[in-house]
Length: 149
Figure 1 (cartoon, rainbow, N blue to C red):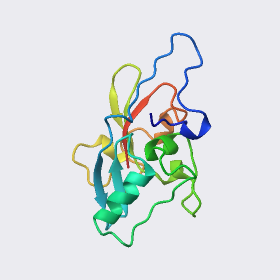
Figure 2: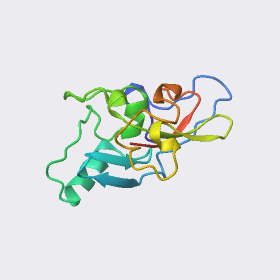
Figure 3: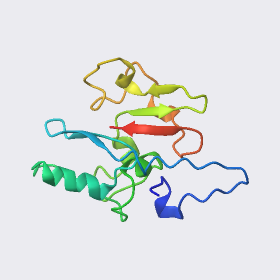
Figure 4: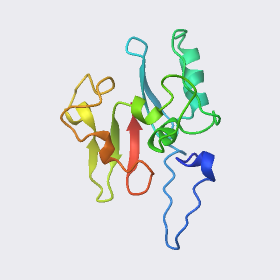
């Protein structure tokens, strides 16, 4: 199971009656890699290594990723858990630009410019008409992030 806390002990529930939703098992698609804007659109189960392999497969030699120690961990999980890498873009949470989030009520929201249907700046501009990403529970506690930019 890929989790947001893979580097910190896994997804063990701490409270009786807790529910674990594994978004990493079936949501493993790399939806887009844009070599011009150097962005990608990922589902929660995409690992750093899988993203690297896909970048290489597509021949984008000018793109590379900022991997933390656990290359097998989830890109999205590391991002929402405010994980880091080892480059000037090391703060992965500050480097992302948008999320699609399922709230505890079941409502689906898109942050930033993703709130506008068909918007083509969602992946490159984090601010805008939708809620700012700080709205998302960055410790994986109350919201489920479906995709990230």
